[in-house]
Image (tube, rainbow, N blue to C red; front, side, top):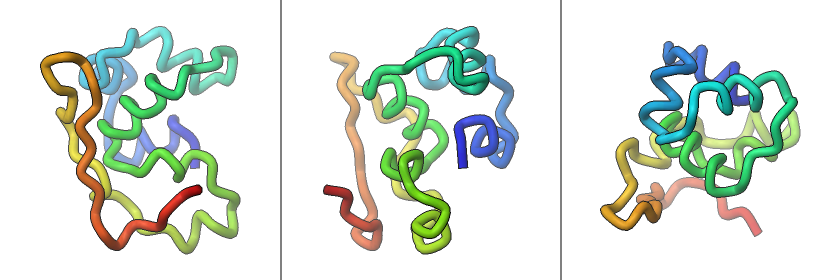
Amino acid sequence: MNIRELRAIRGLAQEKLGFEAEVDRTLVSKIEREIANPTLEVLAKLCACLEIPLGRLFASPEQENSLSWGGGLRTNCLGANGCLKVRLRSSLPTYR
């Protein structure tokens, strides 16, 4: 799945996702249209708001079906210094 599909499943508008992830809405739009190359930090912020593990964006269709959906990351997990604070479920697969 891509960012657009995941955002639609969550029922979020681009503007809402961008606001929650502290990313400009136009960047969300460009990422969805595949005309921007987001940094890993931006992808991590978007995934945190979508409550998915970052590795899910890089999974093949075969892996996609075997991955746990959602709940792996909590929203609003940016600390005061802007660093991500991530709480993973123990049942999530490990990506190396």
